[in-house]
Amino acid sequence: MTKVKRDPRNRIRRSFGSRLFDGINIILLVLLAITCIYPFWDTLVVSFSSLKSYLSTSVHLWPSEWSFEGYQFMISNADLWTSYANSIFITVVGTVINLIVTVMAAYVLSKKDLKGHRVLTFLAVFTMMFSGGIIPTYIVVKDLHLMNTLWSMILPTAITTSYLIIMRNFFFDLPHELEESAMLDGCTEVGVLFRIILPISRPSMITIALFYAVDHWNDFFSAILYIMDNSKWPLQLFLRSMLFETEASYSSSASLFLLGQPMKMAAIMMAIIPIMLMFPFFQKYFAKGILMGAVKG
Amino acid sequence: MAAATVRRPPAKKKEGVAGFFRYLWKHKYMYLMLVPAIAFYVIFCYVPMYGATMAFKDFNPMMGIWDSPWVGFEHFEQLFALDKFYSVLWNTISISVIRLIFGFPFPIIVALMLNEVRSKKLKQGIQTAIYIPNFISWVVLGGIMVNLLSTDSGIVNGIIKAFGFEPIGFLADDRYFVGTMVVSMIWKTFGYNTIIYLAALTAVDPQLYEAATVDGAGRWKQLFHITLPCIMSTIVVMFIMRIGSLMQAGFEQIFVLYNPGVYGVADIIDTYVYRIGLQEGKFELAAAVGLFKSVINFVLIIIANKIARMAGEEGVY
Picture 1: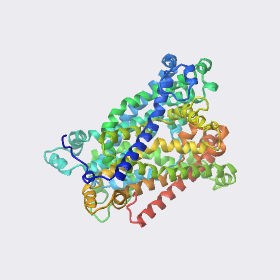
Picture 2: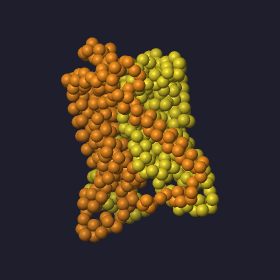
Picture 3: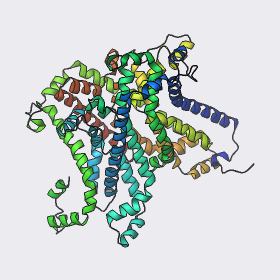
């Protein structure tokens, strides 16, 4: 057997009790992981099941009778695609704006010798501790005529302060020699940001971008406050009306009701597919991203 | 914000205002890069903070917040006379506190358990699995919960029935609703918090463990004398953050899942503000509730931070 690098805790021969502990520990953790995965698996299985096979059992490990009716119905539903397009617009445009505004501000605020950085950082952090509340913000959005536009879901969330602080802390920790030598070579402060800082900050920028993107995709709160027209609904509002108000308010409710749970689960699957596609990137950058700024303010 | 700085020129230096502008000009691109962020904070954070003064005014949409006449504490008096107010306040606090008691230690325990797993692959796999729910919206999770908790075809009631008990209406019965909210909230967020603690755990110097093992300390002793003290500052920061959001009982989750049948236990400050403010149009009353909440929140953060400092930790600011 080849010798692998081992945990130092492993070197001393472990007792029976210690091994028993490890066994139980792993079993508990695996069970915990299953409780986090199973709900999504159940959803996936139900989405491919016929209504009859869905109702026949309460444990859905595999469709006993396959059916694609749920997906067929959802794919032919124009409202779904409208809301999909709205959500994609909000997510893409919103994330680009988030990233530009956040990175620029974080970089400037990370300059310890720049006058005013302390005050400005405090004013940003203060907004995490105290806010005007839902109604005053609503009135601002209304006065800016953003009501019932997709911009109402982009501009009021242009910065998430905790991400700004994470990014600033990351810039803090970059070695200063890099910037100094670039400045000596005649690079300006702004030039340093674009030529030196941004290229080496890619992993953390991607992490922040992913966070912002997920927040936009899942944003339900802004939508419920600011969006009225069905044609401007983001996906989350469409889903809510589908999943929770089917009988009451949805236009073609009769056919929806007949399709029932499998169709609802198909809608859910379609809403989380983009997030699932982002997951490998999370895997790659997430731990690093968390490490870089941790939660310190 | 720049204007505020102008009013207090650096008097001790001889350059005065002109020197200040010269400094600004020299670093103009740096300050220019701040403009979008400053605009955002002013418009969407500080203007609403000013707007919160409408809680003390007779708000007239035509006149705007500035010109609307002051009425003092009228709206607060009205609010404090409402039984409903005490009920939503109680609901908010009880949901938050139950969540804190069970939800706060949970990710710490899971992180410590994961830290004992030696197989890297298994550890990575479990980590990934447990943080998935964090990235899914409450609308979707709500739909999934309805599916899993359904009394006819949900797995949870399936198991309950298999043991011969009556199925439980987790989302419809007001005796179970709060518990369901708390458990599902913990379920959604614990994975993410676990990762934060794990990140702190990887920073612990392995030599400490080695030395302790040589000295004959068992795994439990190592846990209490090395691991926990090393991640204490992270735990404290996380705790202050939790205290700071104690008045945040989870609008999206409850808004998606509640129904008039469970309003008695499920109506929290935010859902109440939404209903009276935006659906019934009582802006000032809703703003008063919102302001009340913000002030309590603020005081809680200050207190938590103070206590952390007195205990010798750094705090969050």
